Length: 335
Image 1 (cartoon, one colour):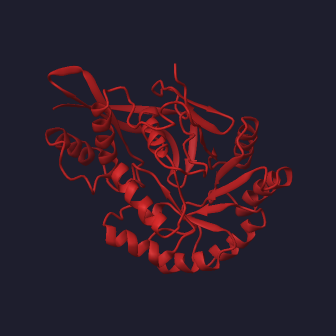
Image 2 (cartoon, rainbow, N blue to C red):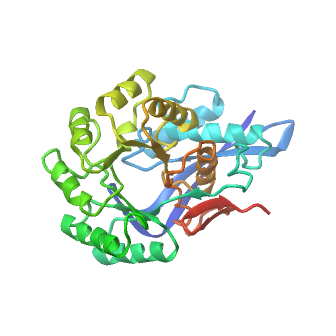
């Protein structure tokens, strides 16, 4: 098997605020695979990282050295390198299925089914966040996810209250993502305030690794809690079971680039469903190559919850795609 690795830097259309600071660009590496006997049929996968969040990224030199090592031995164990594992799994599936970026055969990939998604509101000043909210409402989203924890909490409450005054919870679902911004001392009080706005769920209210604190919050919370960063770096089945059984979250959120590729995500899903814990899937800011793969993977499951897959319009130099977003739904436009 032949292997080629290329890198591309994607430029955000406008700087996007996260708990890891302001993002202006996104680094991604693409793995292409083909057989020498059929060089025209290539599989492609994306290895995409977020510095400070991706557990397998410490610096560019180390990461690219690992990519080169993988190019020499594509079949090696990549458990500790989830973003590379996701890229390799995607490329292998693509190659197996004819190199047309059709990884799975399901209703979504056949253009027969649309997946509901949330509209993402990035962190920023009040004016910027309000502008994004209006934009998502105009685009027809009925689920909005707002990142919180970057500006004054009372301002964030005002923004959420303004949406709830205009739309009931039957008309608009509100999710928030704290990215671990709350402390053990103030988290429950803030959850109680957020519940006043009839919030559907909050992602990762406190920093990961505090299992007993998170367990207590999940027991006492007036609104549902979803684990996100908490799952990062947890690879062994026994440890995954211990995490879910200890914390008992209301939801978990899966990002294949962070949570073990397709295979790691499938295991999380099975363990969660065995415990009657619902889940949804989101991208980790991949380009359209990775996003397409995650959307197709999401189409493998019967899950009516809105997914976090509306990131295809982030970049000014994104790769062309047949993914289309309309009225809060993503689907493949079949020619």
